Length: 362
Image (cartoon, rainbow, N blue to C red; front, side):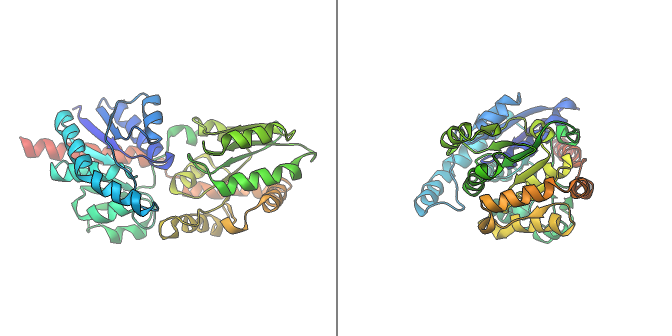
């Protein structure tokens, strides 16, 4: 029986792309879907671009922002919750799926107030701000780590891994062309990785065989970096955002990235060798924990943010480029962290929640 579902999540690609993975499974089963996001977040471009309908609310951030921004967000909350509740009343979803991000808070509160079953995805070892506060009200929490179960009521959580788009599981190892590095600091970019990449360009120039660089910079520093890269004489491309990240993985021999849950799970799904640089200000240092898990399994290398510069990036890349055996071992070892059934299981749980709603209203 087809149902209506609402999905929410935004602010970064790590919140949006897993929700799209779940949405694609639900759509393939004949359900009607609506996303709720903001007009200013990255979701406003990605969700419609993926072919899904989207409604909007206004809300700002609460974590890692100025006191003034927190105050403005607090003032917005009542109207944001009311706007989300109005959307839910009009659309009448059988259940709501939350991937997190600051837009998700008002939607989750509205779902709870309307007694609409709420399914949340928590991919990190320590739950985010919103999930910590609504944990006892969820229908089901889908987790990335076994240790996170303690943060939710008994019987209301399960470890599924993070939903990853199917195309990442289809990435094949690159077999020809120059050794290619993919550098990405996430959808909004990373100043540290941008700086280290720029500092490495003179070191890579003239190396034989030649290295090719694909660099996702984020929008803030793209123009200056693209101009400098064009003058560097190196092969490659410097872009603000990569829509087809799985395609970029397929063109790369090595990924240099932050270690948020989204990045780590995509790397695992595509079986990519990687150098992980944890964001040092992530909540409860969860990015370092993610990177350490792969490093300890010898499935990736880890370089701390404070240690990453152009010279270190160059040395790490050259060390791995000269060691094809280690690159192959990374591909094999990172496989254990891939969870190919996460999106399907999330869709199953949404349908279970919908049946609960149907039975309650009959």
